[in-house]
Amino acid sequence: MTDSPTLEATLSAWEEQLAILERQATAALKSARRLRKAAQEGTIASVPAAVAAMRQDAEKLADAVATVEPPALDVAASFASGAYVEELAAAAKAADVRLIQRDGRITAFPVVVRLEPRTQGVRLGNKLEKRLRPSVLIGELKKLQSRPNRFNARSFLDRLLRAYAILAPHWQPAKTEEGPLIALADLHALLTLWPQAAADYPVEEFLCDMLRLNRLPDSRTGRGHRFELGGSTGTKGDKRLSAFDETGAQHDFYAIRFAMD
Image 1 (tube, rainbow, N blue to C red):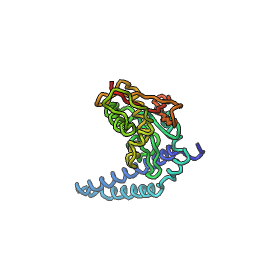
Image 2 (cartoon, rainbow, N blue to C red):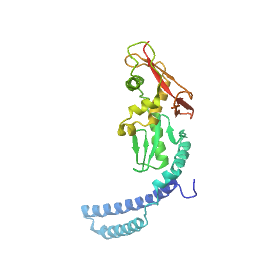
Image 3 (tube, rainbow, N blue to C red):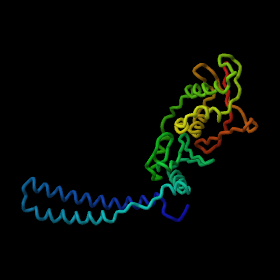
Image 4 (cartoon, rainbow, N blue to C red):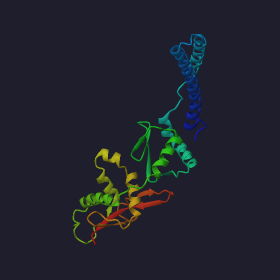
């Protein structure tokens, strides 16, 4: 982290400045309403004082407006340097949110966090957030983490099975023998052939689903196929995919097979 002010500190200072402006605007509005009320009621004697008060508040408001300048913030540079991620990590720690940074990925299981410099936003799962203040973003992340788990293991397995059958053309799903081990990396690649699909379902999201599935080992497809995870660093090609759970523990995934009992 550099010695320059953080985004959080810069926005906090600007917020205080804008609070002064808001109070002055409120005072000017009250003076204008007082003057309008005098006109409505015909209290002529109070008009000169009301006009004077309104002019005075308006001058103070103009002075306050003149001092307002947008803060010097370079979001792209903050993203590129890693300074923004450091701020996110600090805000997460303060909010008791476990943010995992490994292999160039950021996760707060089951939410994947992705910086998007082009849009100057941060994607939390599938939601693009333009609110970049670290404390606000982490607050939203905490809400997403607390949502009920809506993972549908059967639906996910059905989707995997369709891709699996393409990559294992000689396996017959209706028979009882086990299918071959197919690399999960290859399955994800097939599931996301279209560019938009790859953007909507990045490997980080896929791995979060794999973590959920791994916690439900008795799950089956709609047709009754069981699944088995296998493979190791000795698997040909070593297409290991690593995910990190809410405690920061690493889980490695290699391949999957299906079978009908």
